[in-house]
Image (tube, rainbow, N blue to C red; front, side, top):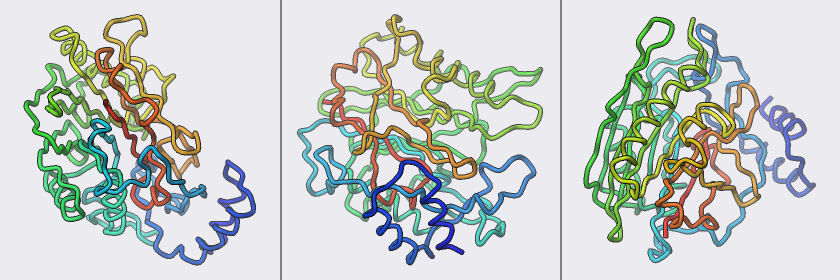
Length: 353
């Protein structure tokens, strides 16, 4: 049944492939027993996740090695190329109820194979700073830092935040000192007569690197998962407004700040939520989204298996003061061949000269 599922995916999913890739898929079919299991995260409220949620690889060509660093190891890192920053949703690095062999099991940590896949992917990129979302307790962030260090990537400086969601949080890891952190002045909004807090909070950390100060603002906006009696899209727009107000306060205090606003926006570029965060192009406070693509020229960062949808919902945006320092050519979406053994998201890498 596993082999049949893989061949079905091959013939039904775009893009089409040449015969050599077909042969590669045959190889995958014989080694599919270690595929990761699904979680109920994207099931409708009160609905058991169907068998389709069991995660199987969307068939994709392996990423080719390239000069942008996709095959670079920590040891071969060229520190003169600039500050390397990765934004990454690590898909539930936390303890939660998970589906194993189509059965719901309570209180399981993220599978070890997925954790190791994340660590390997990140170490291969040798980032200086990593913005993470969808992590659990502070101990989970410490576990990630420890695992990276054991694998040769030491990022000793950390910051951890959360919001009204007691389960999923954000964190940042840095090779360079975190000089200050801040909290947004507004964290709540009203909807349908009720008050809500921003789900995963707003991470705000300033980092000094190479004689420059960077201010990183991390976000993980409301997911597309439906909420009873509430419009999930409207909730996301309200969260985006809170984020934008925080950004405006920062830029009003210092228009020349090297500001990086990043994370899982859970919406695409044309959406109202995303445009609310970036602002108007002619406005001095406009945030430029780095138009990163992978080695094949594709721009998607997330695969929603339940609906079989590829989309771009993870972004790194920068203030006008930082735009001239972005290496747009080298910044890219990391398309490691084993990306979906780690997470349902692909990380985005930005390089600041």
